[in-house]
Length: 81
Length: 179
Image 1: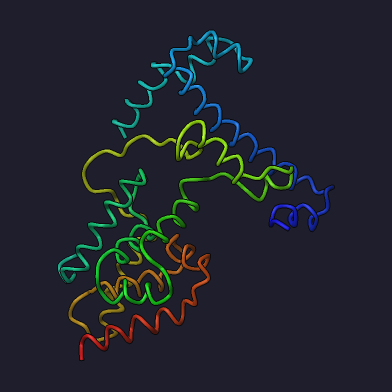
Image 2: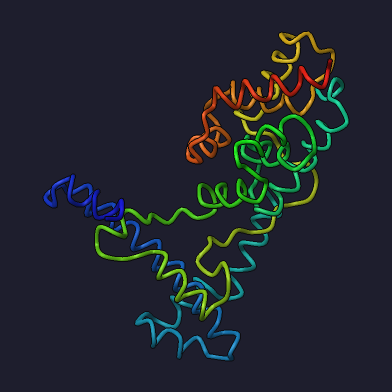
């Protein structure tokens, strides 16, 4: 049995902390997957519009999060630090 | 602080800087110092090796503790096997695809973390205690063990190393070399 299922069994399934921790972990995992797949789609020449449609958000949202401006801001911030 | 360091001890600190930089960590912590002493031939690396700990093994443990941040146990509670997700993702997106993306670190020396500073101070104290005029890699390892709160000790503890035995081994190896 993995540590995780043990964790779920030991702390009863009614303990909110177990479920909340899982939600947080899922969100982090989803973020990482999204970043990787968006980068790959851009490499293959996909438009922001097409990427946005696939992940179910607006074109502006995906562009703001992953576009050149976001990368540029990050670069400037990391230089200033 | 570094005046009393032996050449291998200085080299270890250099290696530690390289490790931190390659991992894109913003500062130099005890975990990097541990990798540093493991990479330079000396009593520390020998003692670590005698407990089955090589630099590459330690590096992968450090990665799990720092770079990753994903929570395999929490994911397992909802039936997700992170290792399977990792394999499937890496097959599509390449190795390290699930690792956190960090911006490259600026050039120059990385600042020491509070724990790393403390560990270096303690390594001086260990050297004085052992009546050594110089601080070698063995004293650095003793300092890391004595500090006790940094990631170095967490990495060792999670590797199920007997810390007291490691301390005794590295002290004995230093005594052998001095004799």
